[in-house]
Length: 325
Image 1 (cartoon, helix red, strand yellow):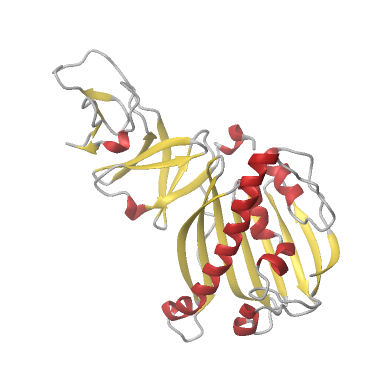
Image 2 (spheres, one colour; image 1 turned 30 degrees about the vertical axis):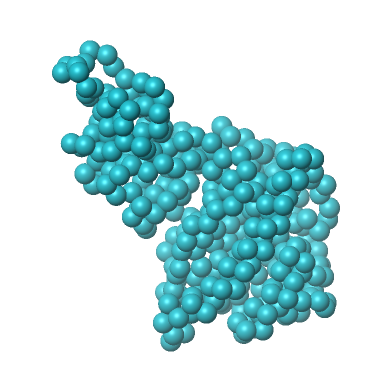
C-alpha cells in the first residue's frame, strides 16, 4: 500500500453522534486520532499530548479547551497550548498536530494530509429507496477485503447455499477502468440460485460492481436496467491487519415500511458478513505466517486493478469473458 498517497484521501471514521461531550479515540492508517467538540465545532488531532505522549482521549473538554488528564495541559481548538497548572502565563509553546475533518450526512470524515476536495461517495439515495447504515470491523488485509466484496468467484464456496448453490450459473463479464477506479458488469445468463435469491430475487439480470479510490465499493442489482438493491461499503484502513467498513444498504420501499424490509433482510446480510469475516481472518493469519501470495489468474477479476490503484503495482487488465460459477 502506498501510505503517502492514501493519507491524502478522505475516510469515514465514526458517526457524528458518537462525538459528544468527551473526546473519543480513533485510528486511521496506523495514526492515533482524537475527535473532540469545542462547543459545536468538531476538531481532530493526533491522539498524544506533546508533554509526555499520553493519549488526549483520556482527558476532557474543560472551559472550551481539551485538557490532558496527566498533567493538565490544555489546548484550544487550533491545538495551541493555552494553559498548564502552576504557570499562570506560560512562556513555553506547544502545538497539537491537527487533522482536517468534516461531517456529512451524520458521518465524521477525516483527511490526514493534503488538500484533496471532499466528496461524499455515497451521494443521495434515489427516490423511493430506504437506507440502512452501520459500521463493521474485522481483522483482515485491506486490499483483499475489498477484493472479497467485489469478486464473485468465492461465493459458491464461502456462501454455499446462501448466495449460490451447486449448478451451472453463467454470466457475461466486461470491465472498464481509470486511475480513479474500475467497474465490472455482469450480465446473468442464468439466475443465481442461492437461498437469498429464492426469497428476494424477482428476476435480477445485471450486477454492476464499482470501486473508487481509496476504498469505496458498491454492488448494484438491476432488473431490466432498473435498480433493485444496492450495497455500498467504504473500506477504511485503520491499521495493518484491521479494516473498518461503513456499510449502507439501499432497498426499494414498495409500499412496505423500510424498517420492516431491513428487519427481514438483515439476518441474511449478517450471515454473509460472518462467513466473509471468517475466511478473511483466516487468510490474514496465514499471510502473517507464510507471507503474501498473489498468483493472478484469468478468473481473478479485480485483484490486479486493486494492486495497481492502492499498491501501485503494474496496471490492471480489463477482462471480457464468459464465467460459469
